[in-house]
Structures are given as C-alpha cells and as structure tokens.
Length: 257
Image (cartoon, rainbow, N blue to C red):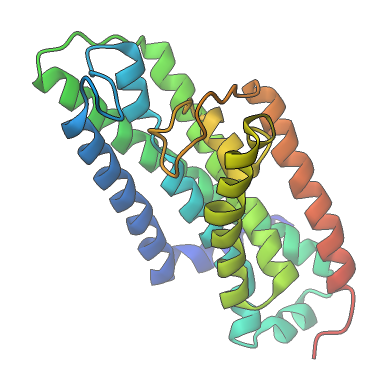
C-alpha cells in the first residue's frame, strides 16, 4: 500500500497539471483576498480590517482553493480512464480497492498542500493590509493557526472526495463538471433555500471549518449561517468519503474494458 501511495505521489510531483491546479488555487485566493482587503470598510462586503470580523473575513477566504483541490482530486483519479492506462494499472495491481485508496490518500495529501498555500496567502494578505493601514491586529495567533488548520484539513478531505468521485464517474470531463456543478450550483441553491441545511454541505461545511462565516466567503456563504463544530464537520466529510468509496469499490469490481 505504501508503495502504491508513493507511486501516486510521484505521478503528481512530476506532472505539470498538479502545479497548474496549485497555481490556480493560489492565484484565485490572492485575487479574492486582495480585492476584498482593498474594499474593506463601512458599507462594504467586508468590515474594516481594524475589527476582528473584518480581518477574519480575509484570512479565512480559502474556499476557492478548496474547490480547486476537489477538482484536482477528480482529475487525478479519472486521468487513467481518460488516457486508457487504467487496465494496465489493474493488471499490475489487481486489488482495485487498493488502487483507489492509494489515489485517494495521495490526492488528500496534495489537497492539504492546497489548503496550506491558500491559508498562507490569505493570512499574509490580511496581515499586510491591516498593518499597511495602521490597524492593530485584532486576532490572536491561535486564531490564525485554527483557521489554517481548518483550511488544510478541509481541502484534504475535499480532494479525497474528489478523487473518489473521479474513480466513480471515470470520465475526466464529467468528473470535473460534477465537482463544479455541485459546489457552485447545487450547494448555492440549497443555501438559498435553507441556511440550516447548507452548513452540512461539503464545500460550505469545509469553508466553515476554516473559519468562514459570512457572505464575504468565496464562493459565497449564506447569510446567518451557524457553522457546525469543526470536529462534527470533519466527521461528516469523512463519512461521505467512506460511503462514496464503498459505492465506487463496488463499481470498480466490474471488468474494465
């Protein structure tokens, strides 16, 4: 199993696509945090950075990186179906559940990197903007650590879920479309109908794990959302990962032609 995971990590480290996805995650995070930091103040989407609420809105804005991590995970696992190398992989490693598990674990490890990079960019942007305006930093070091840890864990779990979705759907384009439609359309529709239900959804829930709690989160969070405790949301995402994995293993046990 360790050998299989190392092989998947090696594939990611030597593929330009991986760095392309990471660059997208970093670029979107930087763009959003810089724009919101510049506009922060009375009457804006983000309150003044002199307040804890305003600074929190900036440093917790890692949602697009989590979305990108999920799409990356879907790409990782569906890539072999697209390039028609999956049969050779299964001939080399007949245990298809083990292959999927290796890809999922490797994708989760990569997702953690996405979350860490995004948290670093968002935190840096928030601190520089607040300091540049002469404001006192209104959040404690422990707050920054907690938000960053939530971003890392949330992105890792979403990347793992994305990898399972990619194995389940098999078509790379369909897998990526599924991730984006779910996160940017279905979750936003549910959020518009029920704030209570929205906090249980994968991307929105992962964003709240990272400390986001207002519409300043990107993608937007519903007004008045009451986030679940981080441990509870972690359990929900982990349970979703296990359930999807079980369904996917059942599908993969059929012959690949």
